[in-house]
Length: 148
Image (cartoon, rainbow, N blue to C red; front, side, top):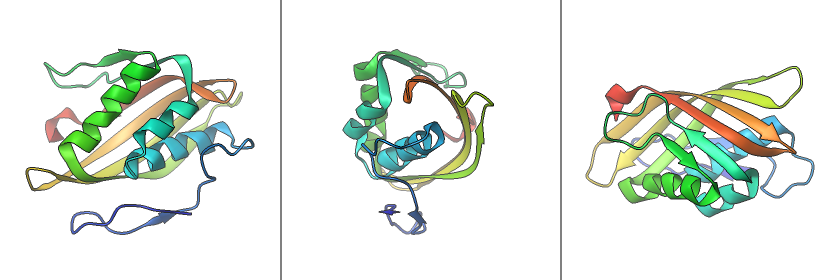
């Protein structure tokens, strides 16, 4: 059970997700765990869920914002942006869809956050994770760029 960050902009919630490193996590549990790790600020632990040749794409990133990250280090660097620009950040997965073969997981989620500069940030997301050997090979993150 993980307690998500609390703040006036972020309601306290608990998620029932197996802990990182659990050898029996299914791909959908890995996807939810990645959101939990980002929410708790444990970005480096996301590395354990990525293949070494993983890629991350942000197809709707605003102009001037990098939208493609190749390799584990580049993805972790992109995720560290959250800690750098927000003093609290929380994802909440609402719907989870798993492909028939289990190698693709789609999550519908929302975020609530507090910027270091003040003010709340909220957005809606669709994450598409493609897996190889129970690790994320391709991470596509769709969000509304108007809220950035």
